[in-house]
Length: 191
Image 1 (cartoon, rainbow, N blue to C red):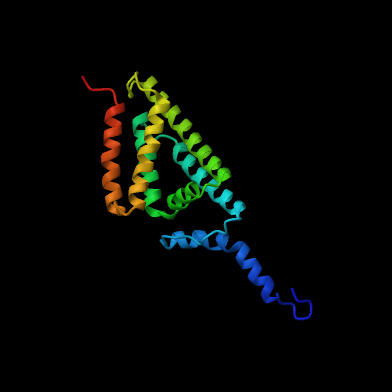
Image 2: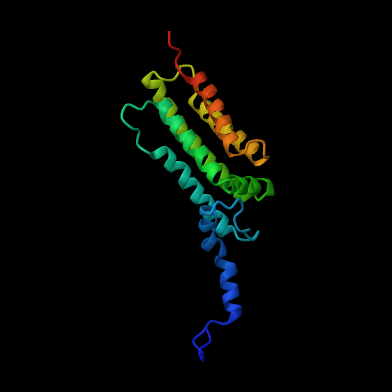
């Protein structure tokens, strides 16, 4: 700040804007439906770490919602699946950015993203195990393997959407088909 005029120097303002632009405009642009968020500098690990933490929080909140009355584990999985697909359809830049960081080869970011995925798989495994105890999911299902298939199914849909194979409407149609097959594989057959 210039003590004579009580105003900030232009160089100081430019530096401040460069440092904070991601935090200032990321939510605004995603709310407006922009497909790309402002580019982060490659050395901005703090901003990347914050972004990954926000994604992790969002994913885990999808699984923390209390089940509605009479909801079994298959319904809970379905609710989490469609909530995540909706989030991806509304915020396509989020998975695109995460995939970009995985491709860039930064080992630290790759480990953080892998920890988010592992934690999500663990939460899904608990839901699937509970479904086995309830009798809604087949007894021979391995909860961790089924949870990893759940995540892989979402990742495949994201990759297809990112490649332009599924526009938003096509993403929902493909998600419906994919989840129906997943559910049919897990569910106890009605005899």
